[in-house]
Image (cartoon, rainbow, N blue to C red; front, side, top):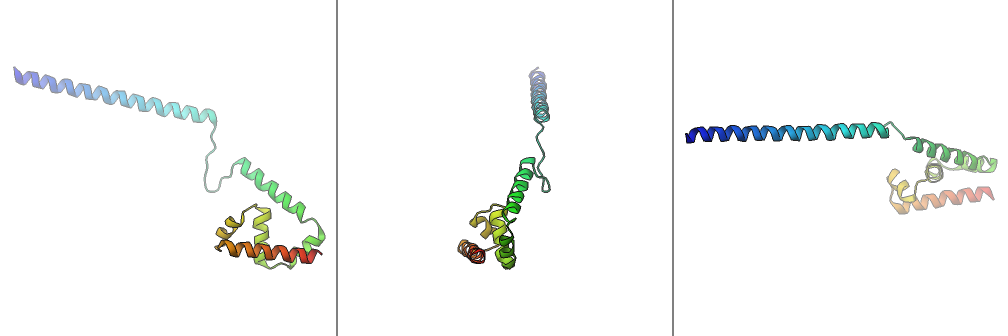
Length: 131
């Protein structure tokens, strides 16, 4: 008789564990589907290496147009053409793309002081040519 009780207890324990697994699975399924429905409603854009959100594209277009407007002056265009490639690159990164000196230094693998000095020299060359 005690053996039957033990077996019955084991069966009962097994059924209880299975029921608990089913409950957990139901909860996971429910959470998963609710999450998917929520994301579908929100139409969350996917981000990838080659994807840019609309706001990023708009900002880049506005920056480009502002840069083009800034260099529409013929004297400025001539002065920019006189700059070296590295000076022009720093000017473009700073004023077209709006990067800080620190960001420019990182992008060009320079220390902050070097990037700052190059920027100052490029601006000085432009000022000299525009006088």
